[in-house]
Picture 1 (cartoon, rainbow, N blue to C red):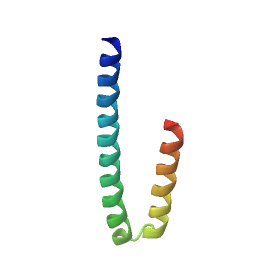
Picture 2: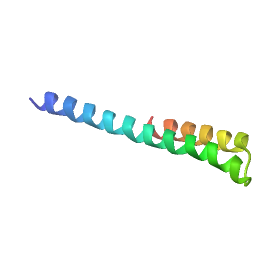
Picture 3: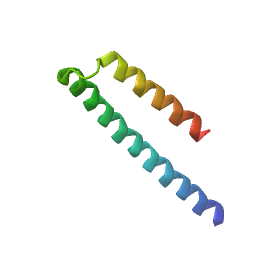
Picture 4: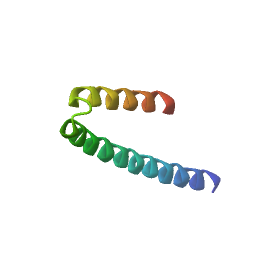
Length: 62
């Protein structure tokens, strides 16, 4: 019974993590589109920052 509850909690946590990742991806996609228009920073720089943040997030989960 405890294993079933643990598996259910893991699945819920995984889904919430995926939803959070999706929200962050949408946020950064909007940011990449807006910042070059504003002329404050180039799109390539933002893409590199997003890639670095994704790599840091993956390392933290391990």
